[in-house]
Length: 329
Ligand code: XIL
Image 1 (tube, protein in one colour):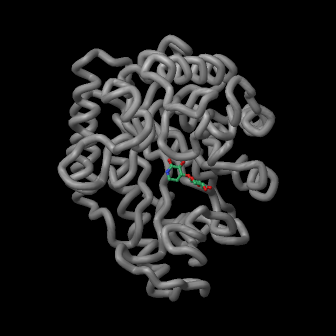
Image 2: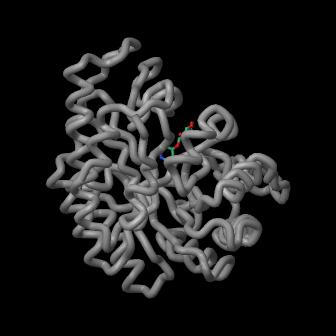
């Protein structure tokens, strides 16, 4: 059977993206070129990969991914500029090992953005400027990070201001996970709303969408989309995968899922895309955090050693039943 291109089927709806790395642009090259019109670097544009030491930028890997996008006429998203993870320790300390001052850290943030965003200007159309700044814990809004500790709550708006100066044409996104769960959703909404009210140059909200068979519910996904869209911003699913496990399931499973589980995943993909199509006016891209089941970061997360099969394409890059449901409408 002829396999239609996912990206072409969704052409009039939204971009279809995949997170990639140096290995998958080789091993999944044909699949990526056919079905996806956007890529995100899975790791290679994070702070520790781009500037492992102060002023020493290492662009080789990121450049290879950007070249891959260019060669295949794909869009590219930038991920990510300000985050608590995968950011080197030097950023927060001076040469004596003491904590830097607020002004020093703001300067480092600005320098990093200027160098990185100007390098990929015209090539990366959209950046996750700040990633995961909202806490899952308790009633507090802000995740406790070194950025927050040293700069204060305005580190987020500063990041957007600097990003806008570094590349005035780039679309600037706030990106987070558990984005559809009621409590976190409301906190993210409050944060983004305050940015909009302060006039910060923010253009969109990224819903990471690391979902599983039971969580979040379709109602909660819908509520999240409507809530964020009510701020007048664009939305993107930035890291979609649907784990073959149920929410609280911590089994360490190495064998392929049963037919019953695969059927649940198929239904889930069908329902999710049905819902996303309803919101084509506000959703501008749906990026998977990978492309096919032969490689996923979920093979070790959140349960070490556990394998997973979260995509529309199987380990041989053949379309799964879920794929056929997603393209039939
Ligand atoms: C993950 C990568 O997929 C892994 O390879 C890496 O070890 C850790 O980071 N939220 C994000 C992504 O914003 O950057 C993370 O990517 C997955 C969760």
